[in-house]
Amino acid sequence: MTVRGSAIRQNYTLADGGGLHVRNDAVVKLLDGTTVTNNKADQLGGGIYATSGGTVTISSDSSVTGNTNVKDAPSNCEGDGTFNGTCGP
Image (cartoon, rainbow, N blue to C red; front, side, top):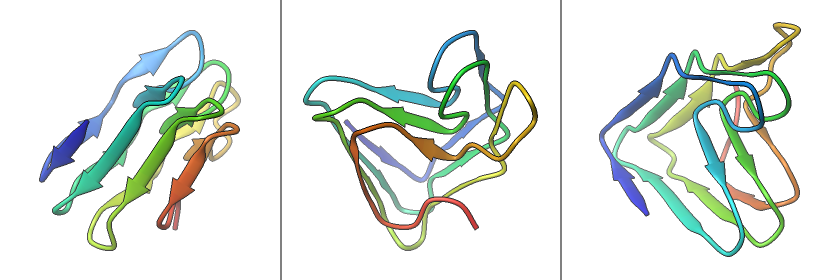
């Protein structure tokens, strides 16, 4: 999946991955100024959670910031997947 120039924001989940949950062998690319912000997860990865085998690429003009877990702790990118690019501030 490729996301271009979009905002993934203000989502909430009782599980992992408030903004995105990348599973299995999925490949996600965040391009062209895409933002993942103000999402919350009751478990891990308020912004993005990627399981083993999942790959997330974040372009230099995109951002994953301001996401939290249920304890309001920063939780931008978590999981055993592969994250290419900067996640968080």
